[in-house]
Amino acid sequence: MQYRQYAPADPLRNLVRYYWSFDGRQPSIPQLSIQSFADRYPRLVFQDIDCFGPIINEAGKEMPLCYLKGVRTQPGEAFMQGAFSHFGASFYPHGLTAFFGMSADELTNQMPDINVVDKCHLAERLRNKTHPERVAVLDNFFIGKMTKVSLDFTVQSLLHKKEGVSDTDMLTSPFKISERQLQRRFKKQVGVSLKRYQRISRFELALKRLATVDYSELTPLAFELGYTDQSHFIKEFQEFAGMSPYNFVRNKSVGAESSSFLYTD
Image (tube, rainbow, N blue to C red):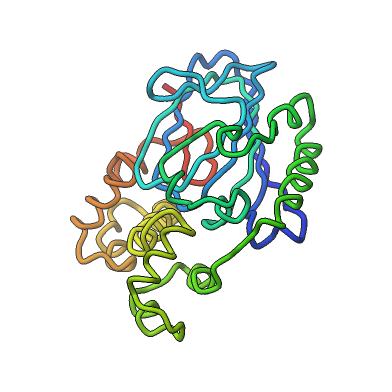
């Protein structure tokens, strides 16, 4: 399986984290499970179903040729065959609002066909092209939509803080708005409350750290991440991943993109 990232054009760097491609050429694998965890980064996903089978969601239905994936606050599962070719974009948390001019919380935990959000027929522009050609298509598409960008400076300032933001930062910020106003504006721009965003940020950091520590080091890791104890860490991890930290470490994935992991059934 081959996973690659591609840099967006310079004007998009504050909105698009990267483009990505993920290709598998193992038709002998009858089914792969896509375990999606909580994820603060929205995505666009294009799947090549001219040459490969489609992604099947939990309800047993085919996913659209090109769809958006909002910020996720809960785990989910989908399925596909071992031979596949996917391409997409990973946005910063405010990316969907910036490009599509909508409240981000309308797409939280949702995965609509992009044409439901914007009748752009983008899927047709991405078909029958190489991945580098798709990068050029998306660069042009998003740059063309930047005239609609209307960003909240206060929210952007919070998002740009290293490793997320804290309640103290929020309450002592120099912005002359109330906490309630800030919470409302943050949720509209990002898709989740400030507190939920902080929790997901910490969970994502836990995912990275679990790749470098032994399971026996779970208690020190819990304290390092700011949890009150190991039990609290395990409970929150279970909420966002749908599995315990132990099972996450034990069940080795065969690939990953952001907070979505591929497992062989």
